[in-house]
Image (cartoon, rainbow, N blue to C red; front, side):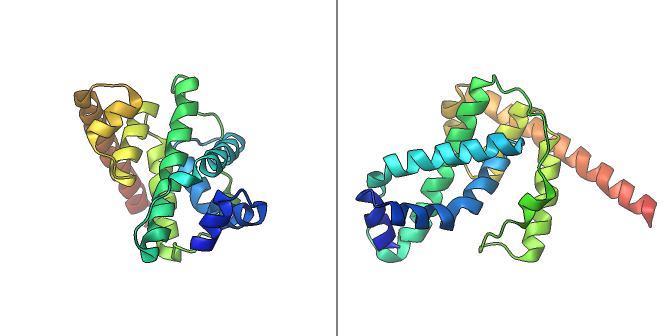
Length: 187
């Protein structure tokens, strides 16, 4: 991985392609939690990779063993910020469109089959949330941002971030209860 990062720092297209192919599925799935239109999600992912390659020299690591974790986290953060930039530009309007089924089949070496099913179900429930609740829920619960970071990124008060998360959790619980009651009726 060190040689890939060093190759990208030198602007070597071969290494950029390797990094892109290695992290594309991961990046696309991260973007899909924010952008549900497939074409826009692809565009945001590609824009995110442009930012990755333009800023690759900012990746710092002390131990080679940590580099994969650091690169994954860094790419994830760029993809989230690029997604939020688009949503801000669109004034956080909900996206029109759906996630095609074949997207869930894009292999991401970090996922097991069970995790993939749970992840898909979770994302489908999160998609039902109003845009601002969805963004805060994604950022806090799934991506691990603190409320102060969310507030800073979205330009909202910390209290608003907390209340949006609380409302999102209430709605998610409602969605889960509805899903359970539908499952019980089918049995």
